[in-house]
Length: 187
Length: 291
Image (cartoon, rainbow over all chains, first blue to last red; front, side, top):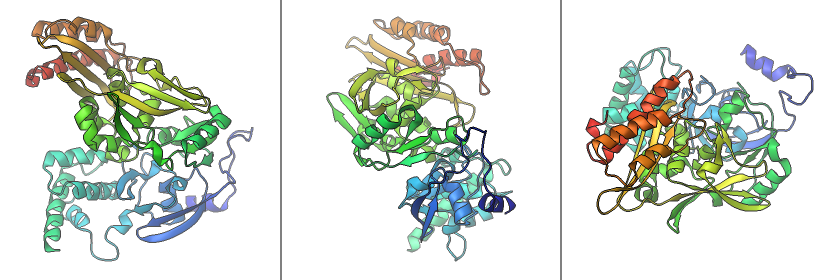
């Protein structure tokens, strides 16, 4: 929070002395975005990344930032229904987009079936990578409701986990597929 | 790890894009999928003063067959090419390479032309375009011109575009009947950055002789250059075990890779030879022995 307050309330430092690379641009652009079903309007700098927009403007801190260059997958969200790295998207370029973050998958109700499966299989340890894994899994099982373990492994290359290891995550995705199929059968 | 400030434009048509490029030139970069550009901006390796976002130019997103080629527009996503029935049918080499391009979340947004313009010598799409002898349609407010892959890829991360130009379309020749395509890649981690890779296309005449061979190796030089000595060795002959061994040795000799954190140059050259042997054996239908 200290860092956020610093960024929000203290005047920015400038890089170098020539003034050609200001840290903040005075020009802001209005963005309209629907996040987890709720409409937001904000004025942001063009250089503002979606990950920072979600965390610092909307205070949706479930989207975690890892590598900040698109490799680790921690910041994965659904952008118009497709997984995307929120660290590789500019918020201004997503005017009119619909975003789903980890906060939006279960709503106020009980856990989403994929979350429940991760919980049951102990598919997380520190939990930092988990929001990204959950959204990758939701997109993947939407496209492939009955995958084999090899297909699951391929899909999970989207994300990195550095503590639990992947075996429990693969178990969880397999279990989640069954849960979602059963749920689909009831409906 | 945050991009420097830039001025943002979001034109609706190619004409507006080209007029903005004419105005801002070398200060500007095109933003399509952003999967190669934005990492470089986040790391401040690149700090363009102007970004021209082409995502509103819906007319630039297409895959269509015209005159023996599949034309792919500047806004066609990699994920669209991956699932396209036209690509699966007409461009088996591209279809085989697509799953290796980044990961799902990258392909959902990254574009085919963007990856080509990025000109990474370890990129899958530059390698495929080189093997297919693709044509690159370059547009500017001054007009259009067309170049081939070897002119387009100048060196690592450098293409031949002038500051006011953009890659508007890539045209990929449709696979010939009786041709065989194989794409192979080695990485330290599944779907991680490639250590080496190969796009190979071999056509056979009625007698089973190799009539045309095009092989392009990833990570074997500053660009995804063709392995011309290997192609010459294959063309006009029959693919047998002796020729395949010779081709592998020629590929290792022709490769001029570099060292980096992922692999040594010597290992890359060795792997390039292995991949050539493996690809040719797969074409003969006994890929299981491809070591």
